[in-house]
Image 1 (cartoon, rainbow, N blue to C red):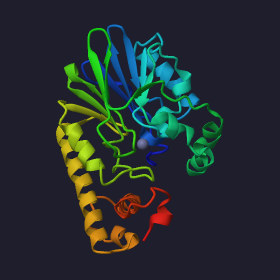
Image 2: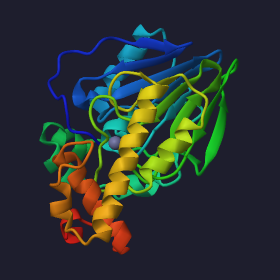
Image 3: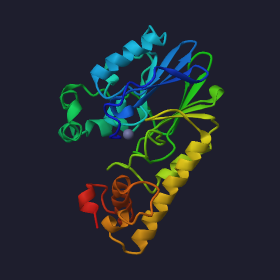
Image 4: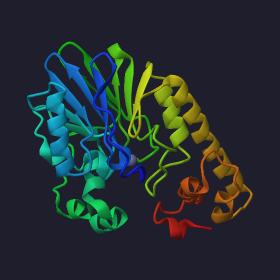
Length: 288
Ligand SMILES: [Zn+2]
């Protein structure tokens, strides 16, 4: 999840970024929600971080002309700001997510999350967590009537269960937090910084012109290519510094990164832990 832009002025309304492919940015954590319209219903991509916010999303869907219940909901990953609003929706054809999401969500440490995001602590503690009921291990195709939407798990990166939504006829991709446009990629304690570049390269193998990120405005392919390069540089530096025996804290402080130190600190710790083949546990324990 990303911590940024809280209190930002109201973002613009729904934007049609490709044929019947919409995005809407929400000021809370600057999450970007997607909607794909088909002849038999609407697909909502991510549900925001609480029931309260999801109720607002429901109203916003009406403004988009979606008056009936969305027929499909997709979660791009298990972070609360993308899926804790699930319980507000009852999609006839299910809530879709990567196969790891039920376990990941069941293992959510709500108290730790509430401490990390005090503005939403009350909701985080109280809201029911509704995991996806349609699980995707590698890929799936969903028929929206006059178009087919595809879901892909392309590998680990931002989390272990990132799901990408593609709308081939519109050459549009919803990438979740695998690509971020509102700020640098978010390397959290559940990220896989050494595998992330390969996953985004897989994403670049898909046919698309427009990419909707998990946070921020839609971007083009060139943006994703640049970010893939930055992600690859982070992974390369982690491997170099680890091989040289540089402690993680010092490695993060070298300034040889495409992102600020505070962004890469967790990436370095996670990368070192993976290279050491230590448990993917707390950053502190893996620091060296
Ligand atoms: Zn996230």
